[in-house]
Image (cartoon, rainbow over all chains, first blue to last red; front, side, top):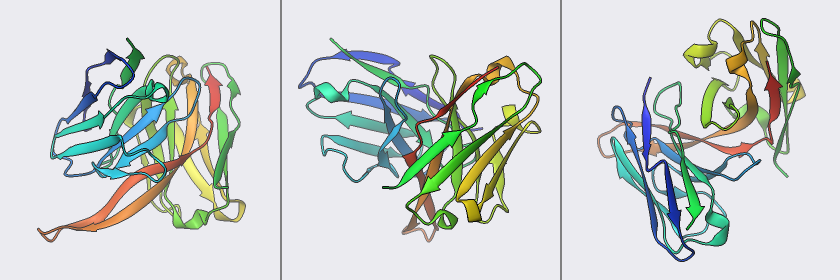
Length: 107
Length: 128
């Protein structure tokens, strides 16, 4: 199975900060990389698919880059509603594994 | 509104069985792969299984192979997860999700679909 490793596992940030989360795959997944946001007690919500394509309705402060085995999710100017857990997921091979998550907390 | 609604969760003894259901509405169910994802209490997301449009292809995470079975009924716009020989480690919220594919054709000549889960249900809780 492809292992997905996110870093950091958690971070503290303030409103207005720029935040970057990284995700590494244990083998090349080309551009088959998605990002999801999850808030407490809620289902995950798709943010970005195929590395950098923004899902409809997602604010443009979210962006994604990368290819092969290394990917990043960046939130420019963090907003109060962005405090949540973020997961990367590869859809290159089944099982379509997730990273362990990155918790973005209020500083 | 495009919607997925899970049901069938509950409390079950180890070794027991449960059948989860996921009812889809307001989209053409037969056009989509469907997926089950679970989340143990306080833990991250775990992809469990998926099924293709006509039910001829199914994939599972190793930890549930031989115990769980995914199926679908196009007439009822529903996808199911039959869970047998349940273990304590199967305790989780189980989410149903719609897979969407985006076709790509790159400069190297490779083509295919980028898959992602764009619609999720609210989940159903299974406690073993």
